[in-house]
Image 1 (cartoon, chains in turn yellow, blue):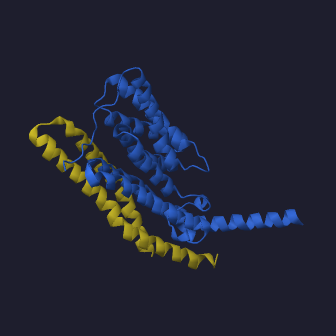
Image 2 (cartoon, rainbow over the protein chains, first blue to last red):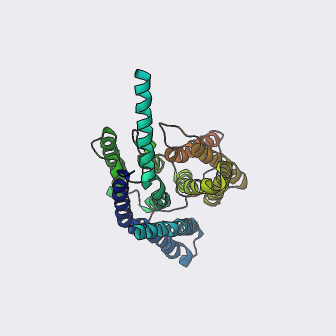
Image 3 (tube, rainbow over the protein chains, first blue to last red):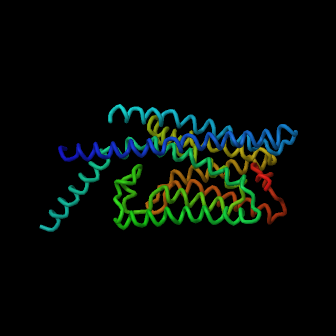
Amino acid sequence: MNNANPQKEAIQKLLLRLELWFAPILIVVPLVISLFLIWDWFARGFSVGISRYDGELLLALLILFGNITIDIPFLRSIRTLRKRG
Amino acid sequence: MYPLKNTRQRIAQYQADLIEQLNAIEVDAHWFRRVFHTFAASFLVYYLIPDVGWVGTVKIVVPIGIVVCIAIVDYRRIRGELNHQRFFGLRSYEKGRPASYLYFGTGLLLLLLLFPQQIAIPCILCASFTDPVIGESRYYLGRKRAYLIGFLVSLFLFLLTWYRADWWVILTISLVGTTGVVVGEAQKLWFIDDDFMIQILPAILLLLVWQGTLFMGVNILPAPLILPIEW
């Protein structure tokens, strides 16, 4: 196991680095897209009284809450890895 | 002598695989994989892009280009030109075969290009949300309950995305699609990843139902959920 520990540490560092690089994209992009869909629903649908854009609102909420639900434990795991690192 | 040598080699290989698994890739990257799944729901923005002019061409060429690039990188990884350990989040069984992200990308590409959005959207959503839900539930509740929860989540997604159709269509489509999702996820094949099957199997089943009803003179597809922005 002595050989495994430095290897394990190297992998942990690589893991943390990659997660930190990707985290903003993985978290921000779905939020931006869901907000854009909500804005689109509001601008083209709700404000002019057209209901055929309601599907966009549904999908936006689904993307928003679905992502937030998974983002929270993901951020927690990064924090744990950071502490360990 | 040969069988003993063979056994020793097998034990050594087993130990090497075990160490690789213990080296945290399988354990610590799992939330990363889950977030990648939910992130994929963002690709629904594709349907906001209009089909006219050069934008319509870009809409087809760019996704194909991205998947081809991923395939080239993965081909180099499988050949050993790129170190497997640098591709973090990969499982050990993906070492000698195409990685799950390539399967996911290919499935997504096929759905976006070949299927109507009414069929593609619930399938993409199921790959994005049902897969992580089943994966997490399996840890705490066991296989059977995890698939039951996955079934209910998929059912919810199909009911939601087909809400504009007639009630008998919603019911039929939801049950067929959800069955496809759960079978696609549960059926583990070594050469095709479940990330591909969870998207394509329900899509093919729904396509068959749609074409069957079209053949009988009824179009069951509801109005699209996402309308392209005006260009």
